[in-house]
Length: 125
Image (cartoon, rainbow, N blue to C red; front, side, top):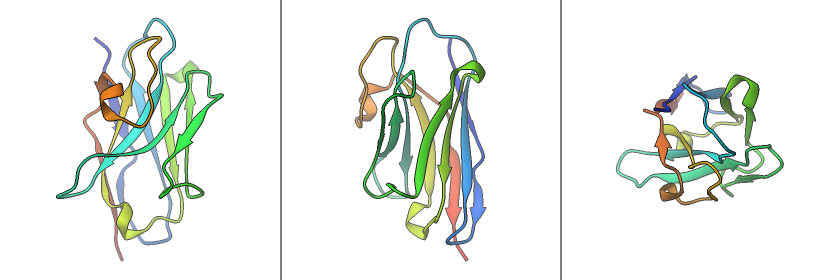
């Protein structure tokens, strides 16, 4: 069974940067979309960014556009989220998701069938 494991979270000051990683534990058969979502305390999970299998297509939520960049390295089975100019409002648990092979996936969390356990990102002075 495919599993996702996130890493790279932590405590950072406003204006700082972090890079999150999400590694698949096994190969999947067929192209799959991957995405990042986040959930702050007391709020629903929200979309952050998504990327197609061949990296030809990316989508970033308006509230992170220009600050966050999603990328992937299929040779390493790893998804990344580079986060710059972090703000206290970015504080949340960040989770990665993978779609089923050949499935379309976008900004809805129900588009993704496999999830990691999440990594905490805290932006505070």
